[in-house]
Amino acid sequence: MKINNVDIDKIFSTEKEIYDNLSLTNRKVAVDGQWNSSNEFWQFKASLKYPKGDAVVKTDNSSYLGGNDSQPEPIQYFLFGIAASYASSFVNSASIRGILLKDLKVMVDAKLDYSYFFSISDDSKIEEININVVVESNADKNKLIDLKDSALKCCPVLSALGSNLKVNINLVVKNQMSIVNSNNILNFN
Image (cartoon, rainbow, N blue to C red):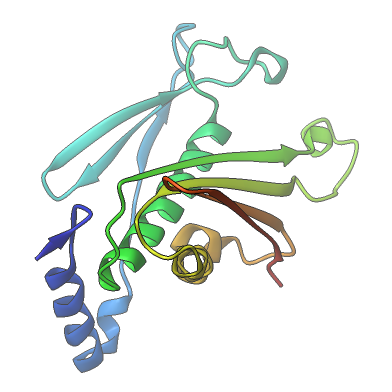
């Protein structure tokens, strides 16, 4: 059965398989890329293979980091990964609980310190990540706030960061009657 475009039967089936064989939780994810030294249209290209094909993505640094400003920066793909992973965790959590979502938007930005790049400092490179979530659903606002927290706990990309990184999550719940803001500031230790 699909809820919110998530096949929850597959999730439950995988969960059952994992309980029978814990080694199934270990999965390898790979990116195969190459640096381009010959033109100004991109600096790095990678093939992202997935079961039904592959996608080619290109990146280029901003001019202040020696690039040509001709493609998205590598950090934007990183933030895309956070946004996509958090959104997926949020929707999966909602779907497993039977909560229908009418709309979900996730915006991510990061406060970066590039002083390490110029060998000025060894301080933290990413100081803070802000995740803004706008959700529309008929579900109770407290259930949606719980989803926000649940998604954070099971988000693979955020979990992989595992540092003292400050993550701010702001949830805006839209419905016909009101807009509810719920903001958490979390530090991963």
